[in-house]
Length: 219
Image (cartoon, rainbow, N blue to C red; front, side, top):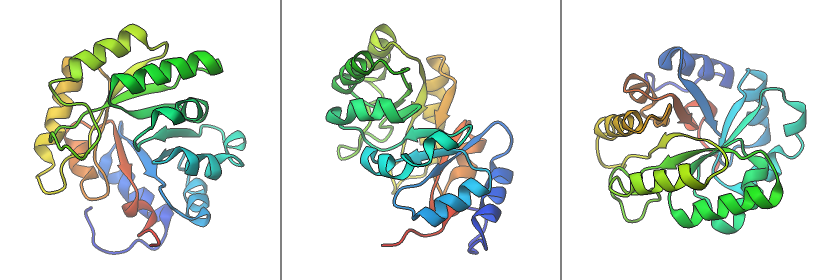
C-alpha cells in the first residue's frame, strides 16, 4: 500500500486503490469474514466484484443479495474441495483456484449435473513450489491446462498465484504474467493488500484486496 494511514471510509479506500492500480485492472474485494456493514459500504461505494474464500460463507453472505445487484460478480479465490463443486458452480461466475485434475473432473461433472452456465476458470499456479500451498506446479501447468481446455465445457481464462510470504513478490508476479502470455490467457490474478500496486505494474488484470479496502478483520 502507498499509505500506512487507516482510511476514513471504505469508499475512500476504494478510490485510492483504483487510482493506484489504474485503468484496465479490476479490483476484487476479498470479503473473507467481513461483517455485513462493511460489505454494504463497499456495495454503496460502487464495488461489484467480490472474492470469497469459502463456498459456505459465500452462500450465506450473498443469498439475499445476489438477485438484486446488477453487475455483481462473485469469484472463488480460496481452495475448493471436490465435494463443494456443485455449490461452487451454482454460485460463482469465476473460480480462480483450479489446481488439479481431480477438481477439474468434479467441476465438469457438476456443470453437467446442474445444467448451469459454467463458471469461467483460472488455474492457480504454485510459483514458489510450497508444499503446504494450493496450486499446480509450474512444471505441471501445461498438462492441467491441456486437460482443462479438452474437457471443461466453459472457458479457461487465466492464471492466479499467491507468492511465498517470505520472498519478494515481483519475480513471482513476473513469472505468472509470462506463463499467462505463453499460454494465451488473458487474465492474471495476483497481488493483495500489501503489493497490489506492484502487481498492477507487472501485468495483473485483477488484484484481490481485503484489508487495504475493508480495514482489519475482526478476530
